Image (cartoon, rainbow, N blue to C red):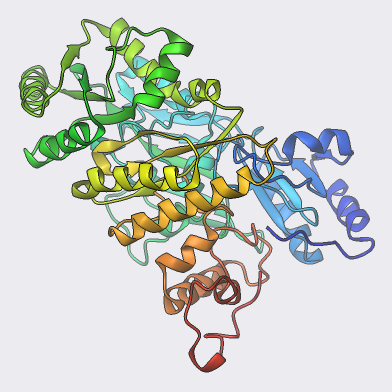
Length: 492
């Protein structure tokens, strides 16, 4: 992300404008107070914001955006800061809009099976509030105990159960945002359908480029009557990957189907002592749920497929306690990985499931080429891979080599017919790969949409969608006759 120097006096004028907001805003302006906001979980890059504000209401959000628009000051929105693609990294010439104080569950309707929440509400808190009514909120990122609903909407987050229950976009009914003019935009509907363009789908996953999320109505689902969890060990990663294809090919849709390789297995065992099968090169963690008979039949079918595909051991969780223990390994895997090397970062690509065995072999081959260690723990059922690249930031050039390796892996996903992100977003991490995945007309269309919502380009500029000029500089786009396609597109 390019650092931009603010015009002389901009900070003072912006601070004066924000201090005039009523009710009074919580404003962070001192260097020490701003330090905790200089990055999100994509810690390879940092930037200290010019100012940070913590609104407590939609009206305050509107006032902040209007003041920044008037002054031409960029606005970056931040939720819990758990994003790992750099989408919430601030700008030194901008205001960071921190949404953590807007954390009310406005309403929960067990009959309609909906919950309306403010953006700062934690993901897990929605399911906790719905549980007494026998309901839950399905999207469950690994960071669900701390990540916020507003950030989930901005990134279109998934989770371990997204195979059956879908991503955030599949579990939303309505989203309210504040656009770059400070106006409220209502998208979606509590009805089954609504006329006009599906603006809610457009806003979901837009990474703060089109508006600031201020209220979300989510769909709640009934807790399943029965849930069964299986753990299967394999002697090779390819065998485990092929078993995934066999399960899906049999017409079975597990609630979750996760995979981890030996590097991750050993890290989890060191960290949590879970008693995993010894000597396994890969583990599959599968969960089936539904009615009593449905779950029982699915359990038997999945177990038979795992054994037929060469599983050296298959375990079925005996009860809810053991099931929770198994999921602890998956959701705690990224913390456990810190025991391998001082630093790592996780990338996020999605491929057709049939290509999973080949792409994993390609990942290991690229890691060997770059002389770096890569571990894999990911949503195998929907082909959403999360290679974890380990490096030592104290060794000159290792971070840069790791980032280059990550880019090569994402480009391999595109070559395989996949995409450069399944749930983590583009942020600043994958801008170069956007130039590989999309052609100039498609990127131009993205910028046209951005311009319609944010003509001044103040909302999270420089994130998610690269400029055509930058793509040409990177060599990821063919420029005809030395002319840049769509030269009218602003250089955010």
